[in-house]
Image (cartoon, rainbow, N blue to C red; front, top):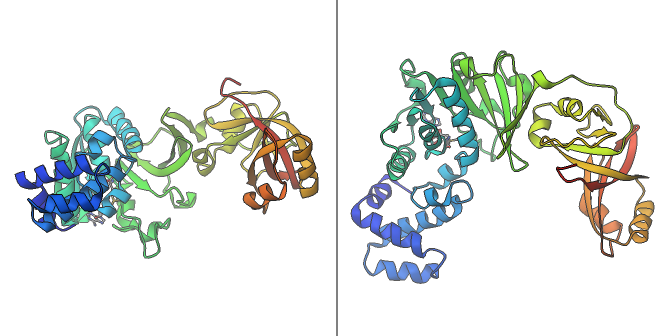
Length: 397
Ligand SMILES: C[S@@+](CC[C@H](N)C(=O)[O-])C[C@H]1O[C@@H](n2cnc3c(N)ncnc32)[C@H](O)[C@@H]1O
């Protein structure tokens, strides 16, 4: 979408057309809808409205559906936007530390995912983006959601912005290299050197969850966030915004449970499996806090390098999925096939860590048939591949 298309969609005629396209998209056949709308509107405007209607429908997976139906998007802007749940968590954390009404600069605001959440958290936020179309879309989104009193957008290169009026900065650099999403901070735009200067002040910087731990500057807290069990992102918190003495944190949304290295008793001697098995949330694993989960459930790791924890007693925790181990078998397809046949198992879930197994191939090889359901956890037990037969335990234990 170009700037003229954004401007045209913001005129009275454009807004009426876009409202109609949004209402009818997915209800009416798209081709027929386009043909009908072109009877009363210029074809370029209809094309822009239909593109927006399509993006609005898609964006309902990241944003509240009611918000998405009022916002404008670019394809890149939608893909790079922080999902509302994660942006809301980050904004609430900033507001809790900075206090209501504090001035924040959202450097690299994109189409406004974080900007909107920051304004709604009660902060006064100035978004900055150097792409004219993206900045125009962000400005339109602020207006569409009625946030003009506490949010505004400036088109500028963030490296030239005077940061002195702001209590804190938020920065979400572009992380796309030539080959898809990049985990390498050296490929960020604006460059990592600029991001490092932000991290010497009071700042929150969003980074890809694959960021190597050694790239996190000293005295900066790294927080890995998952939403409904899926790892979404990491954020670096510096200055007043970092947790005191915390360097690594895992936070689980939507509940907001949080675990840090201050909760971590450190590694214990690995032992063979007890009666229960715990599979930590991916945010916990990326934050290097598997040993903290072991401490929480009074358990131990089966192997220092593998993210499974075992324990003798059930200890429900939001930070890991719990299983009861009902059998331990050797990793031998014939043995597993016999087990499946003898127990009448028709549904096999295969989980694996630390062993070279293709779950789909193993599932097919054991020939499930029957009404039973089982989880095979293939992992290293006492230095060799073994299979733990596991049954999920409910959160109540
Ligand atoms: C990952 S997106 C931001 C997404 C945003 N946080 C959201 O939730 O919608 C990064 C944005 O940074 C902008 N950008 C990259 N380098 C910039 C620079 N030097 N100055 C201003 N904006 C920049 C890009 O145009 C892009 O829109």
